[in-house]
Image (cartoon, rainbow, N blue to C red; front, side):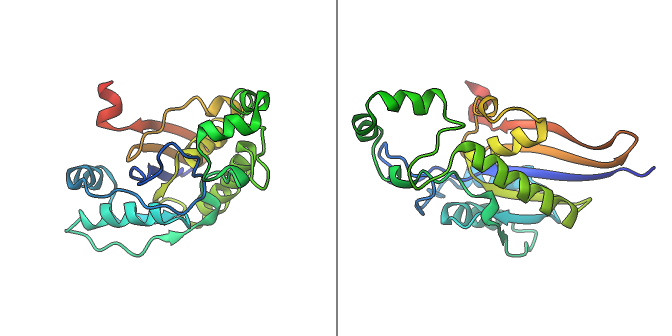
Length: 213
């Protein structure tokens, strides 16, 4: 039986600008894409002839554009905007400093950090919600582009959620993964083999700075 391998290349966006210790979540802030060497390195690691995805937030668009600009030998179609792959929405807490949030929440502040996967901020969503949304997006997108490379320039929360889905682990445990800016996480979806559909994790947080620590 022929096995179909669909390769997901998950790239976290470049560092954000002007956060200054604030919760930003789905705030539509810009990223710093001035490190040309960084993007040239990324461009060399990512596959050619891939489907490109971004979330609806501009920092992913800017990062994808910087990577694509470094690939002078290939014309890449415009990335597909995919809101299912967005960062967690922190609702009323977005824009607050972590110090302000602690003052507002008091003892409950510790509960958020001790049980972050299930805690849902007012007007926002929990990490468990993010896992459900990302899982639905992956289930839809993977068969649409079966057998291809998918480069998704997304967010730290999105990538942790994707790992939770692929590994079948509790969302709480997936929050333990380090996901640096401009890092690559690679996972393959295998379909049609002797054991049915399965995920294979190839690399997590692949990034020279992360590996040097």
